[in-house]
Length: 207
Image (cartoon, rainbow, N blue to C red):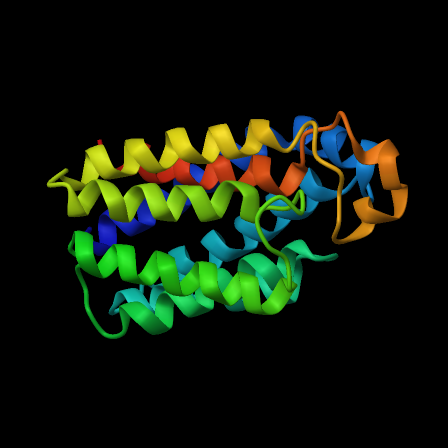
């Protein structure tokens, strides 16, 4: 991926969270603070405004801007978690101005590990990780099987959407939703939903 494609990825992610703002907030109103859509829209708008104002020289700098802006402008758990994801992704990408499949896979894995460390959650806790863990795994597995970047991104998207949908019957074990106990069952997790949008945006940028 070139810097232009990375920018296209984040631009599309901003568009999707803005388009789905009300839906994300509706999901969050059932098991959270009813602000996920608003927060993600505000954060990604702020992040892309900074990117547009000062184009980055490399992928690491690009994702550092995204991550730091999300941490500073998004409330609740979403800002620190998404911010950590992009900051770790940027650290892994380093000073490269293009990322091949292996490098992008390693960067996505580093971002995922950052979210795990920050949020102390795991698979089936009904969080964004239920979409992110299978998505990153599918991306790397597809590449190892000989897939090109667009095909690997499509595999990641399919896995993320399946993971998102799988959160509906789960009992929440982390975050605000966990306070609801069994009342959290029957609702799709908003963080997993926005994570699926992240991988949808990646697939779109690579097509």
